[in-house]
Amino acid sequence: MRWPWVGRGRLDDALEQVAFLRAENARLSEALTRIGRHEAGMTEEPRAPRPVVEPMPESLKEHIAKWGSRDLRKQQTTEAYRRHVRGVPWTTIEADILAEEESQ
Image (tube, rainbow, N blue to C red):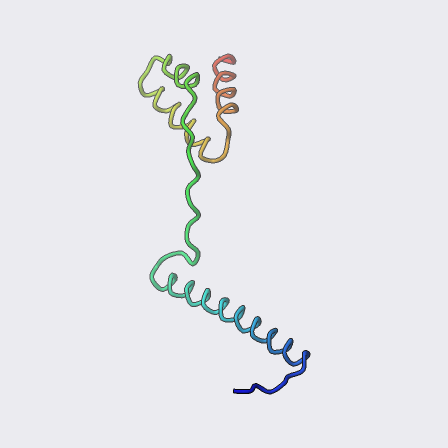
């Protein structure tokens, strides 16, 4: 089969229209997905993945282990991990805990 000759301008216009329609289709598909999630009782956007929790440094573990009460040790450990999950580095957490102890 012989295809008819088409000018370069018309071909560019057709390719631009194809790209526009693909982008519009993707946008509408995302909107349908968000609507479906909302109707199912979920958030419109999926949750972000949880941050990776690095293990507590041994020096900090040893320092917390020196506390007298088991409840205080658990509270300090939990608070340290919560701060780390929020993005605070272990070195800062350790410095803060040592500074709190020195000020008391």
